Image: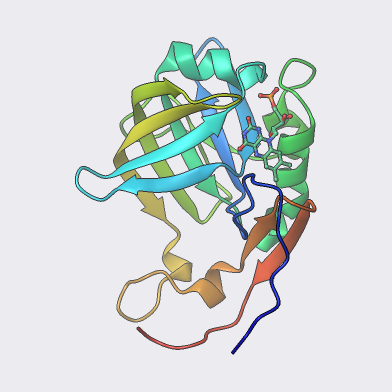
Length: 183
Ligand SMILES: Cc1cc2nc3c(=O)[nH]c(=O)nc-3n(C[C@H](O)[C@H](O)[C@H](O)COP(=O)(O)O)c2cc1C
């Protein structure tokens, strides 16, 4: 094997990336923001990170509230995901604009999105100013999954979840559909 490799400009060239909708807020204000800079960071304690640009309307709400929900959308929520990533909460209420339902979380102030099959409640542990993006590291304090996307073992079935992924280099959304093998 001798692949002919082309040099890329050093950058955040990892593909594919998640595309999630983060919900954040309290009784004062609630907002939704689509994020791709999202990752599992640590297993014990369970911690996840989201990278947010300080000029986003969501940024100050994230700072003030101190918690957030990572909502994983299915393919039927692609338009809602795009809207939450292209419009600002400064200009419109994204729950109203998308028709998505804010459901109270179990342990934190930020509500979850009822229509998303997977919701991960995070309480902010640390915010690190990395550069253009500030990394909000959250302790995962609760998580919820739609019963109808589980397999016989009670584990998430990706075929049933009908997920999509994002290529930030070209701004494309791709379906995650095909099972390859067990580990
Ligand atoms: C697929 C996708 C991924 C995005 N990923 C991020 C991200 O990781 N961090 C970020 O700060 N903005 C990201 N954005 C941009 C914000 O979602 C967008 O600027 C949004 O309108 C900000 O909303 P707000 O002003 O209500 O906070 C992404 C947008 C899209 C469409």
